[in-house]
Image 1 (tube, one colour):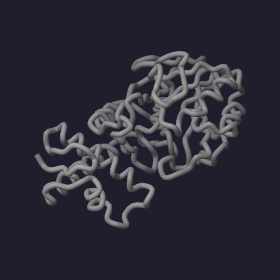
Image 2: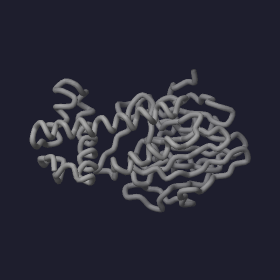
Image 3: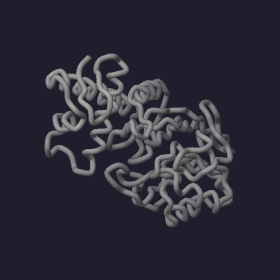
Image 4: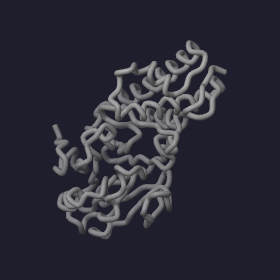
Length: 279
């Protein structure tokens, strides 16, 4: 089994290596995955947190003159901050989906969009715009191996967070999952956790989980005749069903589902602190 030890380069295939950042936690699992794609010319996907040791491991595993591109799946803070240090060290070209992002101290050398391809000497990476977790989220499809680098859209060992206060959109996210399900994939390389070797099974599970949670929220609202997000979280998970550090995130998920249900005309409500009711 490939190594998930932080800082240790691990070969996943002839074209892909992974280095796990030293930022384990409830939202990052073992840590953020940084992927090195290619041998003679290397694309680094998601350089992770600004940790000199992590950047040194990336450069050491690829040789700095071979790093041609630094790619970001999105700009949440566990994925991008090392980009500046890595670009300075290697002279690589920085590629992002958006030109400027609030709170992100980066200016890309090239803005990428849906359908673009990063062409290396041994590989091609196709850009897929995959919003839902974040508006600017993209995945990268390694054409030679049918491997999809999913950032935080699909994870191993946990479900992705959809936070409306950070641009997360459950309705859009569900459409993204359905789109990915239609792709012919051999594997998924997630932003956190190990490689997913049965992509269709995992995507089916993700979609079923979200649909079941949506129906659960709707049933609870009918039963309560109105409830706030915090009350729904208690009903779903129980008083002792979640570690304290995950309670707030559970509220984000419930709120995201409520917003989608409202757009579908099934519930009424306004903010996370307001009472929601069946329409």
